[in-house]
Figure 1: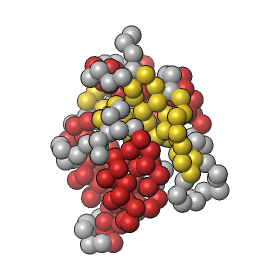
Figure 2: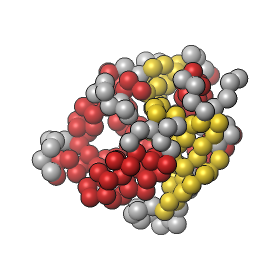
Figure 3: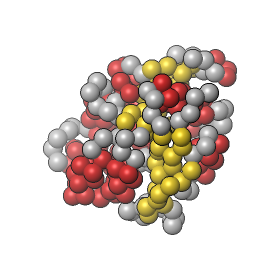
Length: 202
């Protein structure tokens, strides 16, 4: 599908894995990079970014390229997002409790969205923000959920990411749960928000 200013929203390919990793890290505000760096510290990887690229290049990874959409303009990726059904959320929480506590509240909220169509890692490169690209990606993800006949769609966002919260609210999302940040990466009393909306036909 095409949008404003000749921006194309298309399914991601394996060759988009590096961009998807960068977008995932932007969406997590650096938590993902910290997690990938832990893999290096444990001797499981040589470099955090190459480790991330391989993860996103895995066709069977629920968060990887096979479940992703990207926004493209003039032959370059300018944004992306993933969409999938949340499964075994509590198992992920248990895994992260000992290995990476900062992710625990995020995955606890993921677990509460089990069975929903879940929108994850929504991000747009800073240089092209303010042009409605995130809205186009969100709408495309919602279409995917509608096509798969999910009754509800959910996502997790930081409460102090006001532009993102406004965007989601404009598409009918409402906060149905929240948890405080597990770490204090910035001077904030913010919380992770679990926002949900009904997926209805248009």
